[in-house]
Image 1 (cartoon, rainbow, N blue to C red):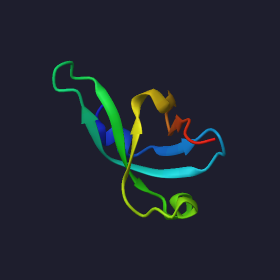
Image 2: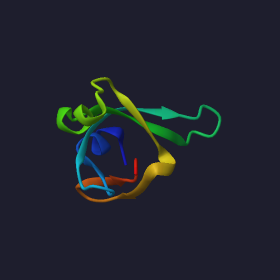
Image 3: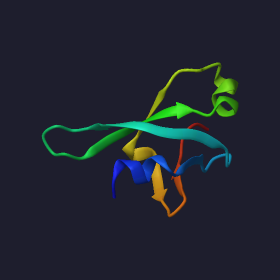
Length: 77
């Protein structure tokens, strides 16, 4: 899978079903080559609740499923 494939998927929080935003970049461990986290450009409706308008980072451990159309993450609550 390529980064461009991931960027086309919606990021959805399984705690509340809200669309969080879209992937604009990834952080990669230089030694292992593993993905550490996704950098997300926030959906203005989601992060408005937290008074944030800047990019945010979602750790790889927060990802529960990468599907055909969406990436499910578990954050908050």
